[in-house]
Image (cartoon, rainbow, N blue to C red; front, side, top):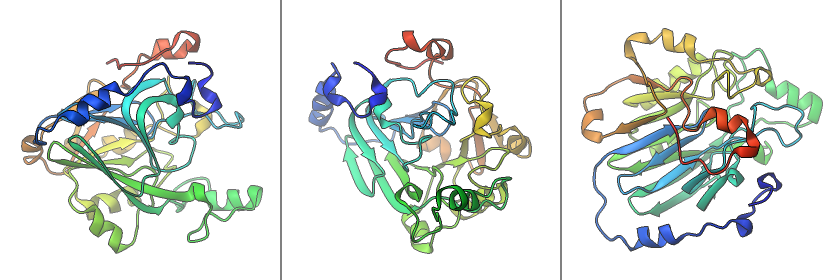
Amino acid sequence: MTDIDTGLNVWQMTSNHNRMIDLQADKSPARDGPAELAFYGSSAFRITSPKGVSVMIDPWRNHPSRNWDWYFRDFPITAVDIGASTHAHFDHDALHRLDAHVLLDRLIGSYKFGDMTIYGIADKHAIDSSCNIYDFKKIHKHFHNVDVEPPNNPRSWDHCLLVVETGGLRLVHWGDNRHNPPDDIWEVLGHIDIALLPVDASQHVMGYIHVQAIMDRLKPRVVIPHHYYIWDVVQRQSTLQTAEAWIRDRDDAVERIARSTKTYRIEELDKVDGAVHYFGEHVNFDKATWMDDNRYEFSLGAG
């Protein structure tokens, strides 16, 4: 494969979708069972079903202008069955960095394959900067003459909540969605076992009070923070900070995951209420190899 940064270049890939042919031929019923969650830093997570169907949500890249790099390198090229993105911002939309069989860019509606169903719920990006030191609405209006306020926001400020059902579990990737969607959105979301929510001390996407408002209304069994600073993945000029302060305030409810993956079973989550699972600085690729970009090829995951 040649320069991946030129954009979607499936025609250059030497891989094929024989694996998907095999998976679609499996007619055995879906079952409750272990589902694996793997963290790739920023807002990127891979979810793998009991039958082995995998989806990567929100892989990241640097800003295409290269005037504001957030990461030391772009997302590691990673093999996965399905790639999905919540919205068209550079830190969430690097689907071209995936060796994927299916791409779901800003999905609205549903997609089912094997023992996994993915629902996309159309809403809007967070714009409440009251807890952030930067007023993004003001910045975009002043420098770009762009009004990000709904309903007349540009495309990049649209947002899709992604709900994944597999193994008897329901997970929501909140991405950068606003904390206060209309009531009909909450009704569609329904019961959620695991919520992936943006948390960092700069309160870049939303304030702690907004995160708490989501938790209070959604009532997930487990919350997993994302979109925070990791010193050897994310650059300081991103303005992101760690999630440690928020984690310390909830220490009694926190499980610090000592690796980049965790397996979930519905029968175990039935006994959990209000837990926080925190991956910290653990990401599911080899950081040293990734930093040497010339040597980096396909990532199959590392602890």
